[in-house]
Length: 105
Image (tube, rainbow, N blue to C red; front, side, top):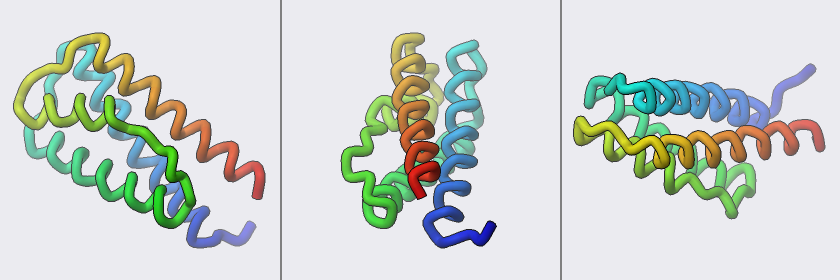
């Protein structure tokens, strides 16, 4: 199977989003990552969101809860359990949307 730029973007986005989800899942369990790791994750999320909107056409993408959870982690605070659950839910929606787009190709 030949890869296209959007396929590469999807694979990279999926990998980044799964890493961010793991970080938030660990936060839900009470393990706060290093601030530098949370800051890197937040920067990756911002870049990934822009790319999804511009290149893949996912204008409707909404990762506000994920962003909010990461901001809390950059401050050295653990997000509340409900915030972590919301972040996991919305990031899963994006992963499922990427899979649907991939199947449609």
